[in-house]
Image: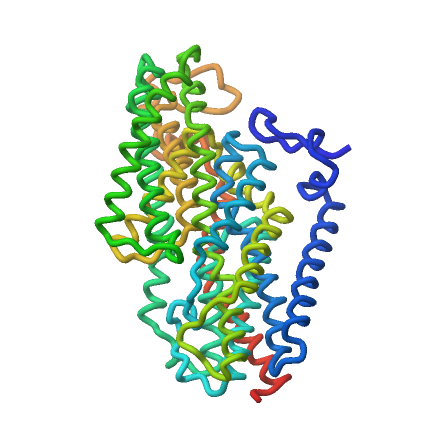
Length: 508
């Protein structure tokens, strides 16, 4: 009998899933099946590439790169998408199957409809292509970068650590570039800006998410009439979210379809703010009728906005991050077809299909593990807290884009989860009753005078022993460590792969 997936309120269990879906979600037997299906997907991509390029000059490069690109796309689906789907699933707003379905559809839609059709072959200007001697050397460089990034993300997923796919591919290009042309070929100011995002992204995401949660506590959750306060403030927050997403999608998610002026972006945001508020206010009023005057009732009002935010984040993610899977592949295809390195390349439709489809397949096969980590294992989330995380993700990207700061969507989302968890922990410990001498004396509390009479060292020990931990330190340390070593780990791996390729196959 398959195990039940214990989402909040038991919203989903394997007993209600079809036999074709249930094995993908849990169990050792399902793991073998998932790996087998992933291999089948890469094999199909390889066969399709062979059918198109098998007899063409340099076709072997394209076939190998297509398979590696498919592997990279699978890993992005397994790791990166959890950042948008984890909070809604952990809060109970979405079932796991519902989240997988929404993510697969909107990730693919974002990749196909709004994914950039022109990308830099050198991945954000990390290295100078003029310093790379020969087209074949450049192809090996990009192939090593792509493979190293995919392997690192695969390893991080196995350890349960959500990492930035952008940083992974940047590290791969950096390491292979240094191995191919030396340290002088690296654009170090760009690398410095990327390194700064290790701090900027999670810090901004965490602070903004915590700030919104603190405001909600003050304005709604701690009020005597919580529902009346919710009718006043929830429509405002939903309208802010809509405005943020409208601006986010116009700036970052619709580059292939439309590139608006700044005034257009602000006009679109203002229109979304006003229109959404006009719609949300009566809807929230109707939804709150008959509910109990409790925090849980207020949390339920955020369920529908959370589902919409998850869909929009998935669309924007597919539009932007698909290039991490297919950018190096498109660069290799261009180098083979043009016989040289191009500053920019147009992404062929079949390459876009590999990226979008691979992300969807990777999400369905391997995504649940990271979704659970982000949504349930770092800290406990409800709809209110998850809404603050989603709102933070959209606003942080808008603020960072306006300031010209490089940020990672992965770090922002996970930073938001840490932010709301650490805020709750701080508030819980600040308002907790006086700590106890021992756990055996749990029924007896100390007076204020008795507490002050204790030596400072003893008071510190007692506080530490009785402090509530609402954020799991094991996950915190694992994720932070994975973030710090992503670029150097993928760089060293790419350098080793590049040297191995050159020594085995040569430069010409």
